[in-house]
Image (cartoon, rainbow, N blue to C red; front, side, top):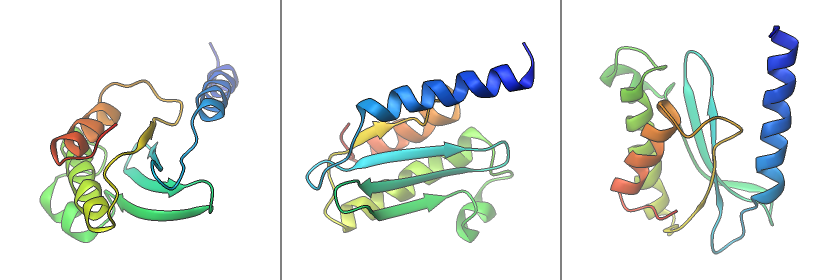
Length: 121
C-alpha cells in the first residue's frame, strides 16, 4: 500500500466520522489532532463555530513535564489539562471526535485522562 492510498483511506475515514459527529452548545465536540511529534485537542461549539477550550503538547509546562510531545504521557497531560479547562468553562459533557484515527494509543490515553478528570463522553 503506497502513501497516497493510505492518505486517501485516512481522509475518507475522517470524513465519515466527522459527518456523524457535531457539537452543540450543551454538548460540544472534543476534537483530537495527532501528529508524529505532538498531540492537540480542542473543544468546539459547531453551532457558533468557535473553540471553547484547547490544549496541546506544545505548551511550555507540558513540554517541561514530559520527554517528548509524541508520547502517551504527553497525551495524558493534554487530556488532563483540557478537562480542567473545560470545567472552568462550565463544559461537563462532550462528543468525542477522534479525527479518523483509531481509538488506540495516544488518542485513547488522552480520552482516558479527560474522563478521569470528570469530562463525560
